[in-house]
View 1 (spheres, helix red, strand yellow):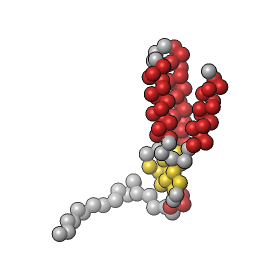
View 2 (cartoon, helix red, strand yellow):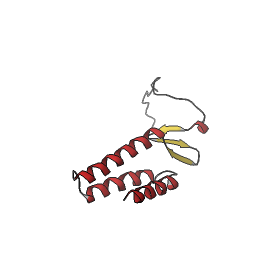
View 3 (cartoon, one colour):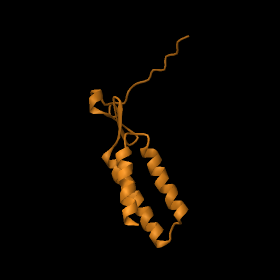
View 4 (tube, helix red, strand yellow):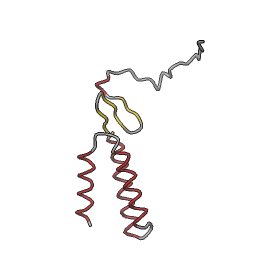
Length: 97
């Protein structure tokens, strides 16, 4: 049994490019055998972590809330090839304490 769905691609949302150029998807650039976080997403993560650190220093949030926020960002980054980035960020965080 065949079902005809009559699906079409949106011209504005369709991008034809070689796989080597990477496919942007949910804050990641997907390459063959490689998943990299996009620079815009890194800026957002850095901003969010700085905001949470500031909130923690002002008493707006408690230590548990701050740790959950950091773990959330690190867990999302762990899906890609970001081990060196996460290690560098962790070292920077411990130097500031």
